[in-house]
Picture 1 (spheres, helix red, strand yellow):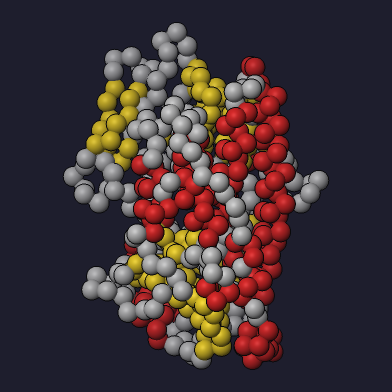
Picture 2 (tube, rainbow, N blue to C red):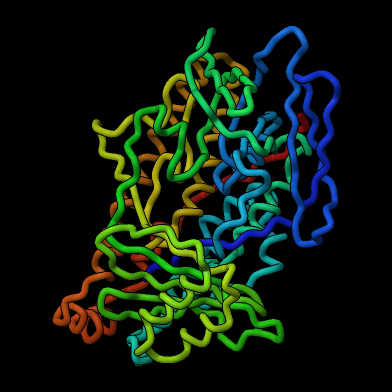
Length: 450
């Protein structure tokens, strides 16, 4: 029984962009715009007048969850990093994502857990229903594990909260990679589309499922798993009426869920089988229409939530993953380059662990990397390999398990669905063993001044 992770993000930030007469000097400051709902940060690049290559110790590619959590973790341990983001501001796509106790432990270690908790409801349990509304099973998280903590968090808020922890010049927007290559002294040279060149001791690829860093390191494209998802965020200005539980709905070849995020918002998704990812649709009203068509004969509760969803929050996503076969997949690190989160191990959201694992990656990598940076390239290389070895044995089984879980839940055979609804879910499923993967220990990252 999985919780689907996703998110929605307009960024409450504004920006000021200033340049000097020196063409290699570029400053970045936050500035208020006329739109109170959006803050845009434009980060500027400073290159010495005598060189066209900027030197950095750590460069992070991508300002998503993996990139910002890695940067915040490094910052707390006294290591400066620069985050390169190709977009003009923090990425606004997505709706919400579900974090289990392992994700909250990492956020607590970074010092931001309580700020986020105060804004979102704690989810008490799970209810599983058929498409006509019949309840098959209900679970309460605390009955299975007193330490469990589950909350759905808007991706926008999570990114903003992480970004606020960083020095103002840490994120460089409009910084799209054009080329990556090895450079002198075992460093990696990054060339941006705008012509800027940066040489870095360590490059951390956090640039998502279509990662340029992962491609350069030899990783294959993620594989489409045979189904897509519509997602959205219902809005109730006067208060949403639903209990804080994940409500799963199982059909034949189609499944859905909805979960309250806050007192005024409800996240939902609908997964449906499709032989191909299909064409990209930019008309979001059309996406909403297609979603409702899929479930037009279902119980009306989910349809009502979709009706309460603004068109501009509805997205359609083909679901993909990458299996990290031992001995066959490239290493997670090569020289001074390493990949984190979806750039390394994209997984289907059927266990609700995509964001949680990205957070885990960040803190494990930083705890190994920060002390190694003071000791030289050989020690850094060993630290990156240690990160890979520790994380692989957790990530690979989770990726496979998430894939298999989704494949089973997407089956269309009427006999199989009948067995699921009348035997497997009501009598055989146990929540406790299915939640063991959320066990993860994480020591606090003690703040160190840079």
